[in-house]
Amino acid sequence: MDMTTFLLNGIDARIDDALFALSVIVVLQCIMVAYSHFAKYPFSAIPLLEKILRPVAVFLIDKLNRQNRSDVSLVIRGLIVFSILGGVSIGVGIGVEYILYTVGYGVVMDIILLAFLLSPIYPAYIGFKASKKNPPKKTFYFLSQALNQNITATDDAGQRRNAYRLMALCLSEWLIVPMALYLLGGMGAAYMYAALSIFVRVTGHGKTAPLFMSVFGMVWTLLNNVVSIFNVALVFLSSIFSAGGRPLAVLKAFSYTAKGMGTIAAYAYAQCVVLGGAFQDRQGFGVKQKWLGRDKSSAQLTHQDVIRGCFMHFIAVFLVWAMLFAAQVYS
Image (cartoon, rainbow, N blue to C red; front, side):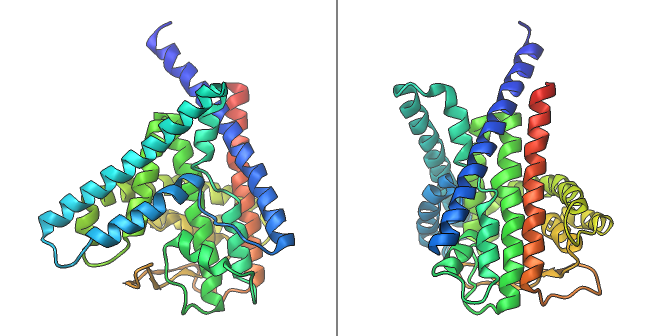
């Protein structure tokens, strides 16, 4: 067997495992949605691996990212934090792999490990609930946790914009990027990116953040700018089948891909709403963000706007599943 055949066979196997992982997590999160709806008890929207990494990231970043440190010290401290998060991430993967092999389920190792990185459906449910009057207890807590934002002073329209922000986030960080990195670089690449993603998003937007994140922030930004091109195309396709969708307007979102706002802009143009705007990160630092959407659209979103966005998001997830299924069948 030559190297080309070996690589192609490896990619075929990854497509198969990625399809099963996405199928499993979608079914599981649909069950979570049904339980949350009837029991009025929400769950965290973030993937399982991020639930493990986030407390570690919050503790280390809040402890080491201090304004009274020198530039060199901040860069070194950021490198240490990322190394620890990367080590924890890989350690979790190795530990789960060892357990599965020990109990005789090594054949499903990649499916389970990849499922730990995915959360494609439940974040939309949290956004949907947060857009209603008097949502279930802890809904806003889980929304704030997932976005790493302080949303205590946010009005109803702002929470609905946050619902879209969460859907755009989960499309990139908890579906497309881990899937793409797994298919192209294997599980190690996907798990290291999980550490990179939580490191950058938890660090936030304080004055010391650029130095603390250093090159890791630039790598994360570059990857997301590239992926947002695919995301805009995906939202374009999903808007064709969505109520109120405006696929031609979505094309304007391509102009925002180099600015790191392509995905959220695609949602705004697709549903003819205005998204973005200023917000506070989890530490209370203000972040100025451009308003995104058509000139005649409104930032005063209604609950119906969020419902349409959720359905469009579900269609986008289905299209990703369909692409994987087609690749698995015809590969």
